[in-house]
Image (cartoon, rainbow, N blue to C red; front, side, top):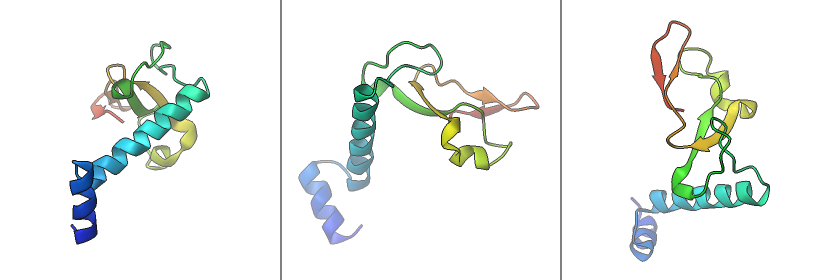
Length: 97
């Protein structure tokens, strides 16, 4: 880690990359709320907190097609608890998105 990143981490009280990820998630959640897009893809209930927010792929990509990973039309938001492991075509679990 560079000296600059170490100083930023020290000031923030958390590793710089974690702080950056947390800030991005806060921004995303705020935008979802402001645009009334904070309903769970799976259960349709409102996502109440940042800790509940999960980004998921509607269709599993792993072992299927890597283009699905990058396809923004394949992205949805859900509760972390609702983002269950998917199963691919042969029935095996491919994990959470």
